[in-house]
Length: 236
Image (cartoon, rainbow, N blue to C red; front, side):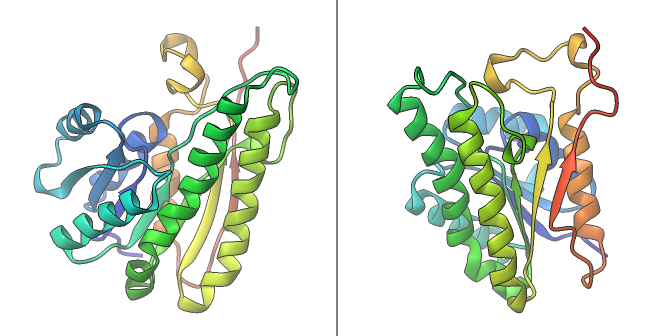
């Protein structure tokens, strides 16, 4: 399906998966808005994307519904439409459950769950108008639990469940809803510094390519839950 000149919004789009998605969408001819919590990082990402008037940077904290409403309004003011929302912003803290702090637990719940809900809530009117697409970036941790992952697992299991239920609620409006569940991705997540050692991992632009593939799919077909992992895991 034709996606050129459509408008996309990616939360947490200043680096990592969000930035990779933004880059790929721009390459298809879409107009792209990205958000982040810091004006400096947003401006830097917009500069690196080098998309001219086809890129908009907005400062938004996804844990605040009013921030997300303001971000969507800025997109509508600039382009008059919103076709695709990619809820990518996320955070992870890893510790045995008896050592996991309340602050880390609350931050994951706020960013990973509230942020997903608020990004959808803020954009629903615009998506209904355009029969748009809402995509969440979950994780294989949304189906595979692991030691020291209690908080992160809880949020990502929640993201998967939320997205699948939202898909059932919104398809009557011809809004498509999917969740992408990546495994190991070469990003700064969990204090990783991407380098040649991460060559075996999924690259952020690979997820961007997957998003464009979803957008191009015929309206009658919906891959609602997509697991994606490195084809050849690192052998240590």
